[in-house]
Amino acid sequence: MSDPRRFYLERDTDVTGVSGTGRVAEGVVWSDGTATVRWHGDRSSVAHWRSLDDARAIHGHDGATRFEFLD
Image (tube, rainbow, N blue to C red; front, side):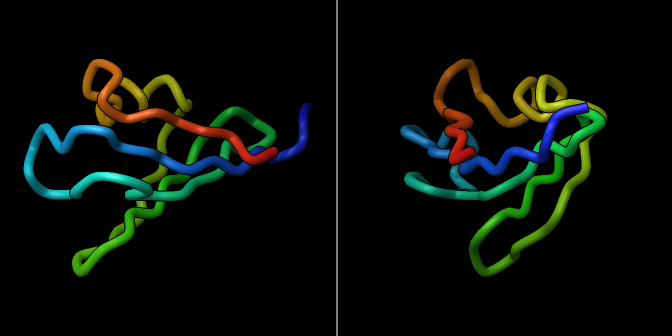
């Protein structure tokens, strides 16, 4: 197992018109490979995914959002 890794979601283009651009969320990839994402903004939320790939498939918007690791 590896240590948890923190990341930000940096969005260049707001495809849906909901989240805006820039740093729109933060998250953690846990030691078992699952990922948690906490969205910023007026209607913040938290989502837990089976893997970072699953989160990226939904929120990556074909490269409009980057998952940038801090750790």
